[in-house]
Image (tube, rainbow, N blue to C red; front, side, top):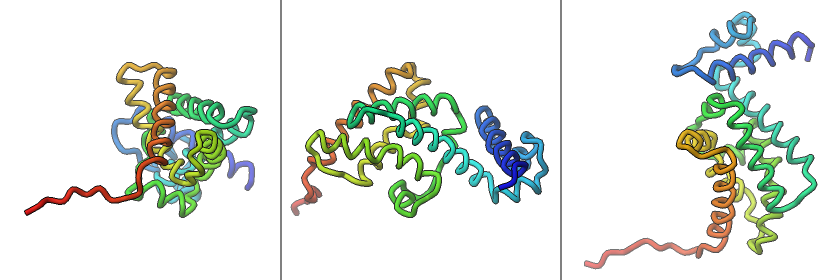
Length: 200
């Protein structure tokens, strides 16, 4: 990719993040282009929609998480806690832009279809989750461990916790503790149907 092309792409992603940080209303690709100081036509050469820009932004943040995880020298729960805490700090750093990602499709469906922006985040967490469940004697929960992490560490809910009065450290500690409990509960739940039947 040419240097000017790379620069334009970076500027568009940065502009989208800045606009979504404080905008109470939907943002258009034309507004993102204006903020990035490129033409709307240039914006459309890089991204087909605002959603595509947000996906690129989320992939960029996920790559930061992956690089942080790769640099860790700890393993298991210690590594998982460090990576999870770093994710909370990334969510707070990027604020509103992180809360814009919504999809009508479920997490596991998107993960198993190799949705691009989820890949670096999954790479950052997979080994730490596998080691943690192994250390806890739970076996390998595979994608379902990622599913539980994603459910607890949703950026919207992290920001909600902070707005409700929790500090960053408190929010991270409670989410990590809840994740540990969720992993144990998920693994030890009986695999049978508990539908309540009514007698006539």
